[in-house]
Length: 224
Image 1 (cartoon, rainbow, N blue to C red):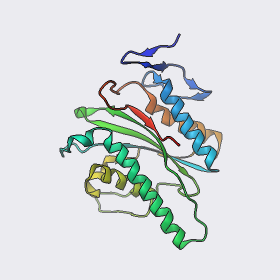
Image 2: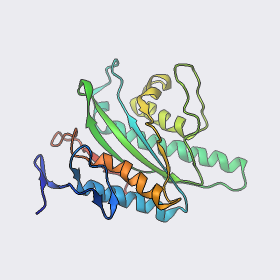
Image 3: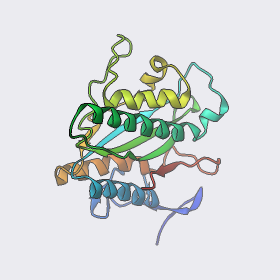
Image 4: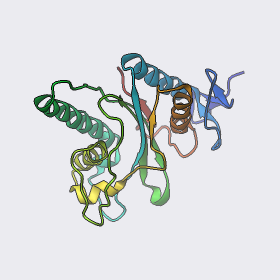
């Protein structure tokens, strides 16, 4: 018998250590089956389109000492983040085409979840998928405090997109994007990388620390 999430009876809880024969991160309690489905579907679509896929995980936070306009605390911010990231990636690919004979394009696929932590501020966990022939790494993750800013790599584009989404200067917003340990996977290089990234992304599917019924989606994914 399927257990349903008490806060939203449309969502089914997943308590098994595997989903579609792939291991999942159930350390923090039950996951949500519909979220797992969309996460795996997004990963499968990326791997179907590109021979190589680069997966990236990151966390987008709000500033603790700056009061933003109320709209930024809705999912407006995460929508603007992906709009900005799409534009920055598209611009980078167009600039590369003017310099090089052979350039690989990429779409930006993603899943994200909205969670709550300290100070009752929401934050977003994000899984990103890129053409691995366009982006193989984040590049140098600069030290903002030291004033080191590398403006021609994927890490900068992700951080700059969050700055644009919050309408904040780069130096204020950039540290709000956290890249955890080992944030990059070459997803379809081998089965271990494929399984490893899905396991990492399955964390976004946990029921804990999410809020339901507040008018904001707790999870979403790209539609293509």
